[in-house]
Image 1 (cartoon, rainbow, N blue to C red):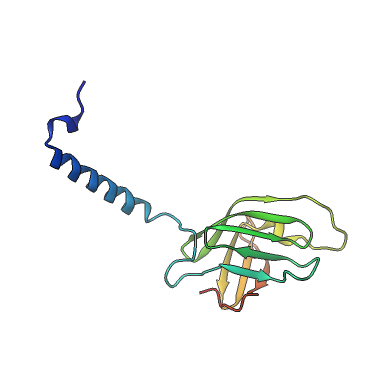
Image 2: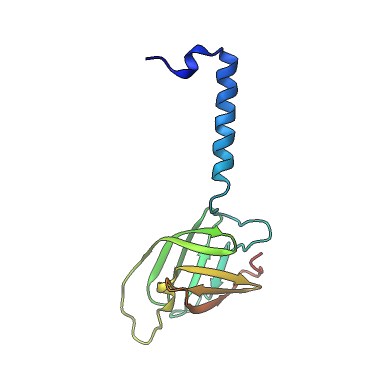
Length: 141
């Protein structure tokens, strides 16, 4: 059995490969992105909340689409991606310690939005569960 490309001149096969790669690249560009954000969209990179205090929630986002943090008791980590102006949390892992007197609302995170220097966090039911202030001096954009 011969390939469809085997009967074409080498130049045609090279052009076909370039077109195929370009089409694939354009097709993937419509997917959610991670990293520093999209023009005009939120940029969560940095720290949100208070890292220095025990029992206080915070999240730290990196430009490679990863985050770490704490709900004030449990450690959280995972990935993040932008979906328009919404931050989607992906593959979230958390410890399950019981800390008396600590509200662990942040461990229920699913998505977030940014307005100015405030990140609003939502659970899987799209209900607001809390807010974090930008601790790195930026405004999230």
